[in-house]
Length: 419
Image (cartoon, rainbow, N blue to C red; front, top):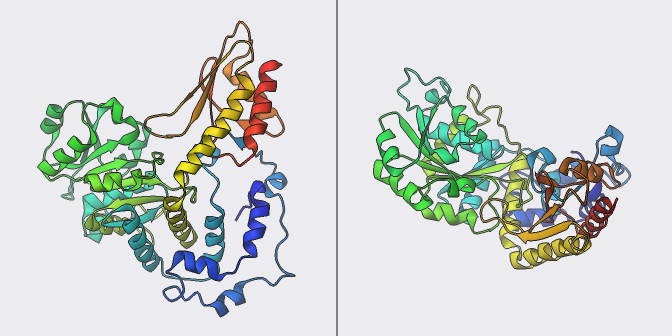
């Protein structure tokens, strides 16, 4: 496993932890997985064999940076919680049956999220593909092996969504062989429903781009006995979104694990009705000859995702929010008095709901484009990434920064604007 340069100290600390502590956190490891103390000891390196910490990113020539942008996949999401890193390390020392682990972890996740059932997937995109696959095949493993070839199989082949919800991630649904049908009104939706309709799909982050709201979408699905799915990939916080849409009645809920929850970046959750989760798992590893075989999730990611979720719901979210606000205030104070600069702190109402500093500038005063500004931050030491939001505007967030990095960002942003 690659060792993040900014986690070396914390990793060393956790390597010294009592190995029993992680077993208590998971509460399900000792007997089901045979992770006995003696077995673990046999697999643990002795003190003189413990690998020395080294900067693998530097060795590879890979640039690292302070993330003042957010939990973007191309920026590798978020940094995992230290407890997650330790859980991954601990779980790598023993074997278990993949299905048994998914069963046990899924039961725990379902309780936390108010779902009938749940399974750890390889991200939200994967959860969407697998969830729809389960809707199409039901409990028939032979049908699972037919996907994405639907013609002549008797399986349904259409997914309905609102036009404003159609984005690139809809490809996750098309991967099953289904055709996407776009509608704009309730009347159009009801006319579009036919014997081929498999699913009604809703994109939470674009919910303001359609006229049919969440509750009505669920109601229409129930009326026509068609399963409903919602994508909430980056829509935590608030923490309540982890169970809100299960409580609302969506049949399937998909979310990323490597964003606010700070779990493995390659993990996600598929939550929902018990029969649909069981059906989705027919297209998952360890089964072969299915469209989901390549969406494998290893035991370390499954356990890491569970620990991330369990820790996340127990956090003091009010305290964390205040810390984010304080960090943003430090950055704003560092730049707001610069001539030609305007600042505004806002909180998005849907995805990435976190205090966000928007900085705009007058190009007649500060003769620099957005990309020139970003490149100067990127080329500095330490390197910093922010998001451009227009010709002369950037957004800065602090929710994936480490303590103290806001001061570095404030100083560097001020220096770049003054040059």
